[in-house]
Length: 134
Image (tube, rainbow, N blue to C red):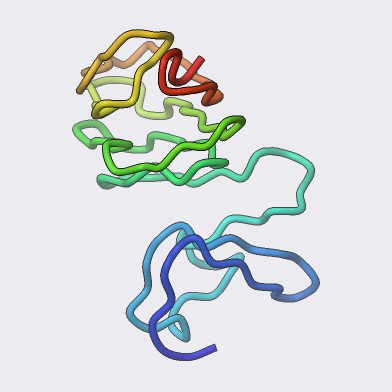
């Protein structure tokens, strides 16, 4: 592949399927299994993305928070019933932010939530506009 490629794209590379997690200006400079722009889809576990800078949630991905002070933003994410996302903390100290935007979390409108290290994990599945992520 060459040229621009936008998420969520899927490719087969070296016998595995890969999902694109970041929009790319030139896909030729980002190789699956080498770049953090990609996650494997056929490993038998939820795809993960280790992030050290602000990121926008892609449904179906478990994010590993690798730096303090970053925001995981879902304010522009379009959710469908059954869509999943997860968070795992790997920073040890400091804070990070989950921006739910207008998406409800267990029926509550939370907006931006600052999380202090020590919070270990969050797994949510989208139900509907009333319940949101549960």
